[in-house]
Length: 435
Image (tube, rainbow, N blue to C red):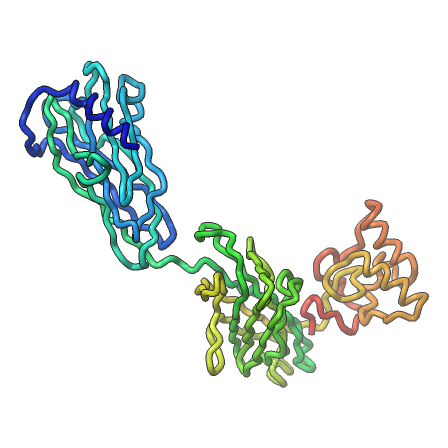
């Protein structure tokens, strides 16, 4: 690291003739700053303006920063420096990392034949820093003369003279990092029969991590969630893990059902390290309930309740995700629950279990119901996989052939929720949020 500096000054001396050291406003070194969230990064560009009448033979400078606030990541030549020697790199170029900063030394042409002509906006170098200081603070990068051993001076070589230029540093604003995790509630629908006004529903709440957050994907240790609703329209019933969260079989799941919503806290494990990364929108918790008693009876218009992420309870349960034993705030996207009057029940053809998916289990269900005394679906229309009006082995064959042999798909409604109108033979099918 030291040898380049010694060599640089020897080379630079060959380009100099005796001359006084003096400040010169015609030569200005400056920096560009940036704003970054804590943990984020940005570039500081070293710029040079030559408004004098002479060309430049070379330069050197040091850059200093507070290492508790900025972490130097990379340093490289700027766009001007890369082609400064008649389209090629400089005759001599060295960039050195130092404690609390870095240095640059450049001699354009070892034979002194090529110069940097007068002009402005020359980009000499680009340094990338990570903002590691406290949020909502400002730190600086400045030119300095104490970096390296021996120390590298900040000078411009002009017509054989070493001239200290005017300098101005850069400000870096460290911003409060946006929450890296996102909670989403969908805009969902639940049907009800106006004769009794009863609606049942189940809605999945999802979690995802912003891909630009530092450390993505982060290993979460748990989370808590609170969602409120209109208690005059909705009666909350339960909140349970679903999807990848349920698959972990968490050590602790604490739930609270409020008059106006649901709250839960989940800890994956206390002793054995168990983590979960939310890469993409991931179903995490399922909330369920019914319409408030009597409120929709005789209502043939429908009604909507907001599903809003907000702290609830006493003490309040907040919407946070835990990473490295630290609670991380979240961005929330609220949803809604619309109760729609419906006298015809929606279902998915072939889905005898009523779990919203037609798969091999439904074919097995059919055979068990027909030959082994297994349970019978409460929705015959869903069980009638081939829509021939009969419930027999042909329905199981339809499902198996479709899944494994490339056979025809079950008739509509399939693969999503729907119905074929009246008449119906379906008393209950909950997977489509029917009444």
